[in-house]
Length: 379
Image (cartoon, rainbow, N blue to C red):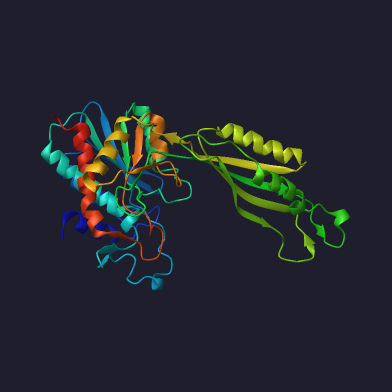
């Protein structure tokens, strides 16, 4: 069994459902320390983070990832136990195989190989891992570590995120940016009453409906060359007492904008509240900015390097996308870093029988090592 496959097996066996790291980071930190890295274990609340670096000065290239996974769902629905790695038909199965313990294993092996071959490389190479990427808030993971970086004056020039980015084959798609995410929790106040006496009540569902129709059809922006137009969605909507003869006294809605660089979060907030006010609603709206949009522009050193590596090692000219959800790259980009995401196929992430191709898993360390060598190896 190869080093990367053995390590992926070991990580999958650890039931590291957010935020429980289940011992993944001590295992990884021990190997990095043995390889000559300076290793810090940073625990905030219930979340474990690891920051490891090799070398000094600049530039700094950082790989980031996460050891936590989403719950498996009904284990009986899996062909093999989700936390017991299994190899079938050229694939490694298990929760986290693709998202993203396979990439974490590949990053570790690549970094070990790189510093062994290039002990006097220029600048710094680092690995930042967290056990709080899949959770709902991400408060104590990379977001919190970045606060420490700012306080220390840490500079990151290039950041490679190992999230599963490929569509059908390793190297067919990389992510060069992400949309921002702005969420809101909305409460519309009404007056509870009997459905037979609507004149004595105020139905918040009826009151909100015209505003919702306007919000859903609003053209927030036109997008731009790098991003599609901003999208507004309602993800949860709840009202009612459970009885069919009672007008509810309140309505609760969860809303979200996936917004591009053509809009600003503060403008989206203001326009949303203007619509609610125009419809005369009594409401409370609490906002949460989950992450701002970012883009590594064409011609960026990291972007061009990753494209070149995909061409040379995978034989593909990768699509350069800003689609998908969010990643921890959104916390690194504001430090001034170029951020690119490249990893295995994402077809089975968060699903029953999550898996990664053995061929792609074996090639991932080569891909990550090649990025290191083209950016940091001394000629």
